[in-house]
Amino acid sequence: MNQLRNISKNLIFAFGLSLFLQIVLGNYIVDGDSMSPTLNHNQRVFVNKFIYFHIPYESQIDINLINKFKLNPDNGDVVTFDPPFPYDTTGKEFVKRVIGKPGDTIENYNGTILVNGKPFANKFGSTSEISKEEKILIPEDYYYLLGDNRNESNDSRSFGLVPRSSITGRVWIIYWPFSNLKIFDYNLISTLNES
Image (cartoon, rainbow, N blue to C red; front, side, top):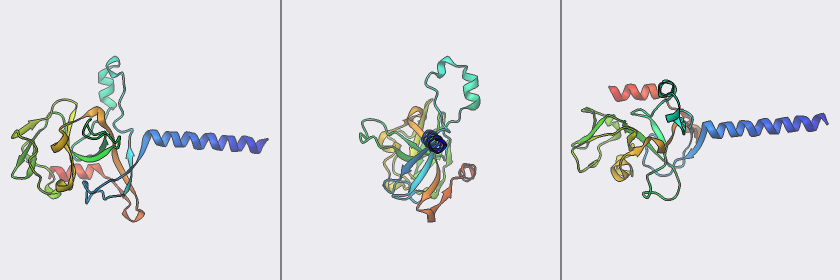
């Protein structure tokens, strides 16, 4: 009887842990080369799905309390998101880099992305036209996302701005292949983008 009880406890613990990890961590398989060299085709990554948590009825809760604890995507973050419908109907999430957040201006100057008038991480290469408009002001609750491999990426240049509600998480760890193991240091990324 004790053995059956121990097995039951272990199963419940394993199920609880699995459920917790599914809520907090997502498993994502990179499809394509749009984020190369940061992420390569068929790499497996863990995505922190909790970092940008969304409260469904936040209008009924003290907004100051929410803003105190709520994190929003920042420029440089590598995020997963649901692409705008009807651009993609497969149900598969995309992964791109946040280039502009609400209130930022985005412009293309001879292939160089300028965010608020300053070049943004030009190590990712030049890009084709981002818009028919010379300058884009990003409205509240929207983000501008680009792939690091600008010549091979379908991104905000194709499907436009991405709403905050479509962003599902931030890439945290490359775990497979194990030889490519990497933990993303977003403080370092922010520093590189500012320099």
